[in-house]
Image (cartoon, rainbow, N blue to C red):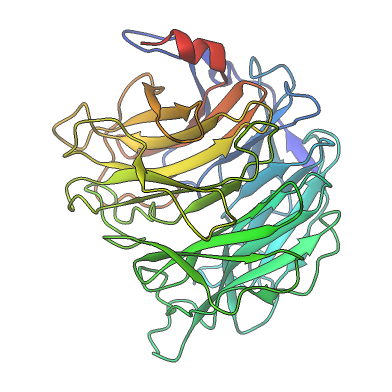
Length: 429
């Protein structure tokens, strides 16, 4: 696949910190219309200065100098959103998005029937045309998430709807999984979940699947459904549990509402396996947000399991505010080189209205406690019922952390990132 590059624009360079800003922000993209989906970002472990980001609209941004300059490009085979980026230890990038095989452009009904994986072996400079996964009409496929193990095997999970947004009580949503050794040839999709959800793409649907793979190859998948968070696991990659493990209740469900945001969808969980050489090796970390403290007090939570998901610690509140404000739409990364955990999320602790900041929380003790740092230079005020493209993502490697987020100013969307060093976080009080 060809990518179309454009001259580097000054606005893509580092934006100088102003006022009380703590860290420099980088604007990647801005526009009047919302991006098709949320942003994504990945660091190349082989060449850490090589970072690739997507604004969720088929636009990619690549840097080879650690974020000093960024080159934009357009993916020519991009058909729609739900973009996701990961990178393996050899420096191969994988870009996933949902697609409609029956049209040549963005579908108007939102009914996607396959996941597409595009691969880049040259640091994000060029990409293959893409390989479809999960095509099973008339069923719809959406919300892909992926991870890669230490042997460069790729694991992809997503939600399959019998028919997206169908109110028929017999219509079901399930969690699917497929594997690949190279991102080109994929295994036959396998249903992971035993507890079906409905097809409304809301609280009672099976949503937000995230895979995690331990250092010894054990595979885990988490997701939300019916105001609970579940996991399933396989120790050999083939045989899965007969019954899903219900890890925790989720007050408010996975599709709770936050003022100014028509759908938070921030309740869907994130699962990561610790493959570090620290004492936390083998741990599972589960992150989500919910409204157990009431509809006016959304919080971000983390639990850890040291025995393959059988037992979990009590939930730890990641945001360290006094309560009564909203923290939502979190994403998490584990630096597999240092063992530090990083969580990025939207935060309204400093405001009495809907003005919103972006915070980064980090833990150096396996999630037992977190330090919170505001990383956005200025707050923003989302308009009424903002949803599309409003999200966060994060990547971390060897003490370099790259959060990415969307903001809305006067109805105009923009995508931002920051390239942060752990030693700089330690200096911020």
